[in-house]
Amino acid sequence: MEFNDKKEYAVYLKHNGYNCAQAVLMAYQNEIGLDEEIIKKLGSSFGSGMGGMKGTCGALIGANIALGLLNTTSLASKFHAKDIVDEFEQKSKALTCQDIKGLKTHVILTSCDDCIRNAIDILNKKLESFNE
Image (cartoon, rainbow, N blue to C red; front, side, top):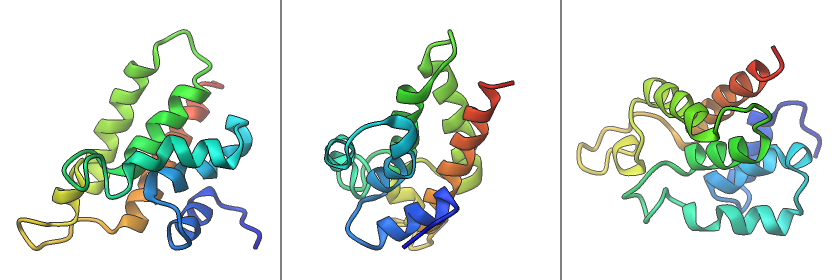
């Protein structure tokens, strides 16, 4: 299957055996230059967010791992990551899976698919800014 869009490729992967972090990382496999098995291992602890829905959304984690691997600037990745986290929270309405999925409120704020799309949109914008 061929995809021209990282977002839709990652969503496809999410529905075919990858968790959100792995799916986002796999969307950048060519740029990252790591084998699929290594990428799967990098993201393996972040299915259902960190700590089984208690922690940060896996899509956001995947975007920040990719950021660290792809940062070409002299500014430490943690400073770029702050921008990604802030924008992700604005777009997805929360940072943790339990809040995004509405475990306590029973109100889903953003679908997993859209969290993946948001993370990739935001990361793409950040990576493009490195070339300006």
